[in-house]
Length: 213
Ligand SMILES: C[S@@+](CC[C@H](N)C(=O)[O-])C[C@H]1O[C@@H](n2cnc3c(N)ncnc32)[C@H](O)[C@@H]1O
Image (cartoon, rainbow, N blue to C red):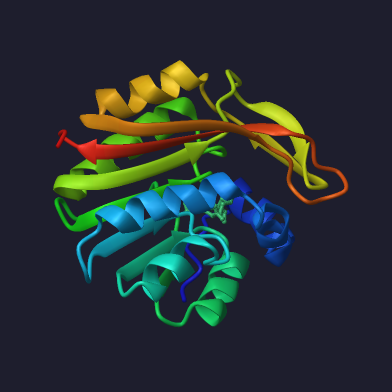
C-alpha cells in the first residue's frame, strides 16, 4: 500500500475515526437496502468499484461475499488497513479518487457511499462524470450522501473537526442526471449514528443506471 493521501483533510478525519465509523453506522437499514437493490441487479462475478471504501463493511464485504470482484479505493491509510484485514476477498488501494486514473467502461457497478463530502462541488460533479464514464453501458451507480445546501461548512463529526460541502437533494439528483445517469430508485431517510456526539442527519440514496435501462 503506497501513501497516496497527498495530505488530504478526509484522510486526517477518517484515520482518526477508523473502526469507530463502522460501529456508528452499522445499523443503517437504508444502506443495507441499497446493497440489496444492487445485488439483485448484478450478474454473477461482476466488477465493482467502491469509492471511499472505509472499513470495507458493509459494502465490500457484502459484494465480495456474494462473489463479485471488488476494488475499494480510500484516501485514508488507516481505513485501507482495516478493510484489507476485514475483507480479504476484496482488493483495496490507498489513493485519492480525484487523482486516480479511471479506465473507461471498466466497471459493472460503482458505489459512492458518503465519500463526496470533503470535496468541493466542482470536484463532486467532475468525479460523478468520470465515474459514469468508468461504467459499462447499462452499468449501475449507487450514491449516498448527506443532502444539505452547504459549502465548506466547518463542523464536528463524531468529535472530529470536518469541513463539509454538499448539495440540496434536488441538486444531487441534478448532478447525477447531468452526468448521464438515470435514477431508478431514490430513498431519503433520517439516521442517527451510534455515537455520543452524533445528531440525526438526512441521508439520500440514489440508485442509478448508466444511460437508462
Ligand atoms: C463517511 S466514510 C464512508 C465509508 C464507506 N463508504 C461507508 O459508507 O461505510 C467516507 C470515506 O471516504 C473516504 N474518502 C473521502 N474523500 C476521499 C477521496 N478523495 N478519495 C478516496 N477516498 C476518500 C474517507 O477516507 C472515508 O473512508
